[in-house]
Image 1 (spheres, one colour):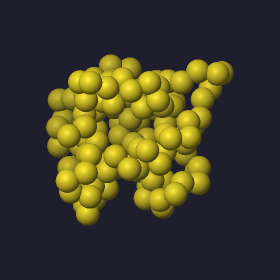
Image 2: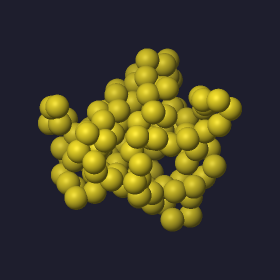
Image 3: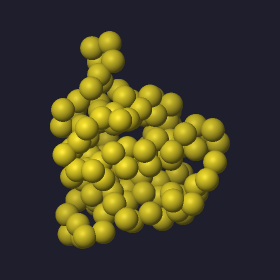
Amino acid sequence: MDIGKLKNNISYYEGYEGEPEVVVALKGAEDITLHIWDGYFDDMFSTPLNRNGSWSGFTRDYQECVGAWGETAFTEIKNPEEYLADIKLYEGRKFEYEETGEVTLMLIQLLEYAVHNKMEVEVYIK
């Protein structure tokens, strides 16, 4: 798996400096990091998709204001499979911003890498 685009990728935050930034990083491999403008997450999760009438992964965290979107502004994902299954629901969906679709694919790639290598993921907002 090519992870070159996942190494310290700030391209989805450039131009939004000073606004909320979501950082998604592999625990123990901090050079594999996505820096994402919070607006792309809002674009993705403001109209949530769910499976079997319940939320999971990023959708749950965002909608219920927990983890990175809660008071601590931090989430340690010990089960990246759950977050991967959730984010895959949004793959191919139409968004307001074209880049949101790209962010979705980057998150899928990062989570697939985490699952394959049995790694935990950290998400925090700064």
